[in-house]
Image (cartoon, rainbow, N blue to C red; front, top):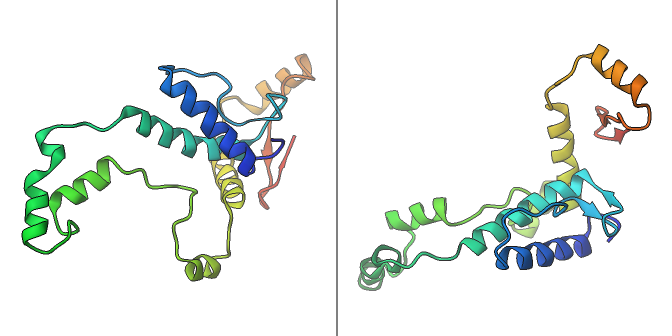
Length: 168
């Protein structure tokens, strides 16, 4: 894919899932890459971060112990309220085993519409703007000037405008 769209997302998910399942734990150029590594996108990095987080969680697998089998919790639900929602274990498991999406949307359609109908690309773009506006300055303006003079074709820095548009 040439842009961070559905194709890019499924390509990233499949590639990284298979790499993770093979036992790899360090994969270069696994995130943000587009057009068969000819380009990269900050938005794709943000989207891929969420995808890869889920892949890592899935590849960790499910721990099977007496506690995780939850026989007593199941018994209490069957003989009691008929659900697990009020059980402390449910809350604990939701906080440790479930990954809540940062970009993925789980709102009902009406609420999603009220909040502006943002798709993942739009959310990723906002996240990139937020990250870049809060990115710490590691070098002084003088050091930046010197680097640009010495390496005019290499020392590129992304500037994010107040409107959220990036420019090189």
